[in-house]
Image 1: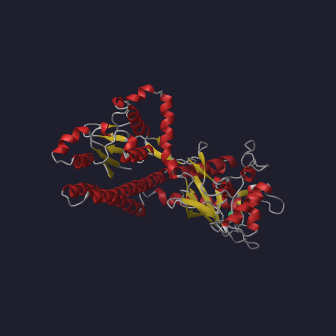
Image 2: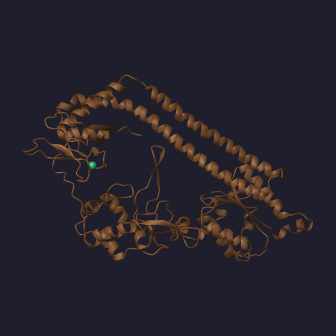
Image 3: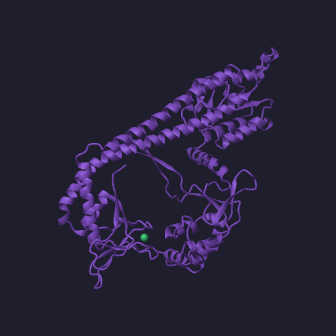
Amino acid sequence: MSYFIYARKSRKDADLEALGIDVLERHITTLLELAKTLSLPIGAIYREVVSGDSIDSRPVMSQVMAEVESCMWDGCLVMDVDRLARGDTIDQGRVQRAFFYSNTKIVTPNKTYDPANEYDNEYFEFSLFMSRREYATIKRRMQRGRERSSSDGYYVGNIPPYGWRRVIAPDGKHFSLAPDPTESPVLDLMYDLCGNKQYGYQKACTHMAEMGILSRSGRPFTPSTLKGIISNPANIGKVRWGHRKTVRTVKDGKISRSRPHSSDYILADAVWPPRISADLFQRANHPKGSCSAPVRDDRPIQNIFAGLVRCSQCGRLMVRKKAHTKTPYDILICQYTECPTVGIRIDELELALLEWLRNYIDKYELTDALPEDVENVAAKEAIVKNFEKEHETLLKQRESLFDFLEQGIYTKEIFIERSNALERRVKECMEHIISAQNDLHATLALQANRKNFVPRCKNLLGEWGRLTIPEKNSALKVLIEKIMFTKTKRNKKGQDRSDFEIDVFPKVPK
Ligand SMILES: [Zn+2]
């Protein structure tokens, strides 16, 4: 986002004009100088050549209003506020409201008006006549305008939803969706299974796997992907908005971003026709027996690995199969029948994990920093520095852009073009710096936390023999994120050690 310059003649300029001075160009030069001083990126220069009093009689102003109302700009540079609206109080109010609700600043050589600042009331005096509540609603509605205007029934994602492919919309500027020849029949089948036949998600997945139908990743559909696909309103010709807004929260002084599923979203009619009827959509998304198995907390956990071990072939959690007469010991299996993973005796896996813990302690107990850690940190620091240097160079270029303009090397048109290109690079560079810094900090935190992890592992190993199964499970869950398990060969007769691998992910806080 950047700023625009709005220049317009007023009656008091007539005397200067009479002396042959181009007032408009003088104003633009002054405002460009102001932009340079305040280091504001300029994205456009608007000149009003028509001298009408009302907004509607000024074509450039009408466009400016539309852009401000759709929250396109950070701010506007203008010689003084009354160049924007003059005379007519209704127009004045309209301009004030637009800037206020879209949170667009007005920068003049004398003063910067920031709508977010409550005390800029001399400028937003009309606010006195409106209730707080009215403000809040209108403001929210207008600021949503940005996301809405870009998404008015068009598809804005990069990857089309399952069953669809992305096509250019009739307006030639946006994207729409059209049925994908191979995926759309599968989509119909999904709705038939879950909606008409009232299959549960797992049953529908198994059914499709048996038919040899695979997802885009080339693997069988899982209940959660299936659920995600059939609950997508794109299938009934709707666009969902604000469903997973990025929410920024400050925690321990750091900003963290999350994308929670929100119930407060907008459903708009899409530009593509629905493929699935609303009725079938409803039925498929609310299958009759659709209650997930209740979590039983009355019974103690009987598997030390409950919720910890995942199958490396399909990524699912592995579950305990109780001992019975044929196999008199508990085994951990991947429940998914199509999966090539072979089960493992839980006691055998337990020994392997204890061995992993011992090795981990040996490796990290005595060393302060491993050579590869030092190298890793140095490399990441270098990346951050490089981006910071690039950023500095770009800022210098911003200054020379203004110089070129002043020296007449650039025309204003070229200046705007270059300035926009430069601002994009500045923004990209900032993003690179932030992500490189995050990466570096994560690495440092990881290394620091690994040190704390060792004594806790030692404690656990010391106590292991005295712990009950639920205690072992909860202790492991404190220390370990997950264990990926690989075993695809069955044991031969009489083989007492299985051929398997574990990949343990320690829970080192980031
Ligand atoms: Zn599996």
